[in-house]
Length: 165
Image (tube, rainbow, N blue to C red; front, side, top):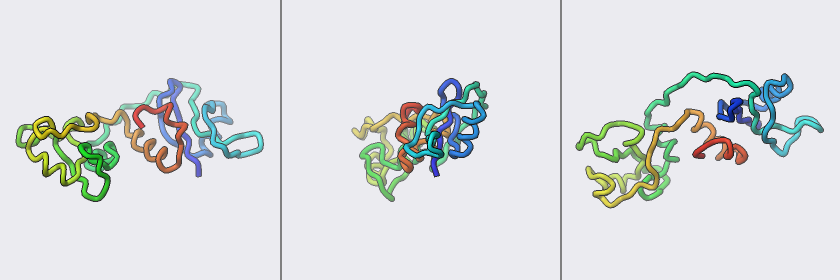
C-alpha cells in the first residue's frame, strides 16, 4: 500500500516507511504530518504521505558503494552523452583508464555502446561529446529509494523535501 517519507526534525529525509508505522508515530505524538494522500484511514484521519519527527535523530554516516548498479541508478539508466535509454548501456570512464582515470563517482557515467565506442580513449572535450550532467556521488542511499518511489507510486509531494529527484 502507501509509502510514507519520514523526515528528521531538521527536514532531512531519513527513510521511507509503510503507512501503518507512520500512523503509529503520529498517534504517539512522535511525528507530525506534512503532506497527505487523497485517501482516508478513517473519516477524520487522512493517509499521510510525508511526516516529520518532532525530535532530531542522529543518523550515522553510511557510505554508498560504488557499483555498476548504483552508477546506472544515479544516471537513470540513460546515456549521459545522447540520453539513450535501453539495453545497450555500459559504463564509461570520463578520463579514460589508459590516461590514469580511476573508478570513482565523479569519473564513471552510464553510456550507450555507440557513444562509448565513439568516445574511445579520449576525454569528452576531445571527442566533442559534452556530458548532459556532471557526475557526482549521491548524498544518500535513500536517494535511490526515494527516486524509485516517486517514479512508481507518484509520490510527487516528496519532491519539495528531497534534492535532486
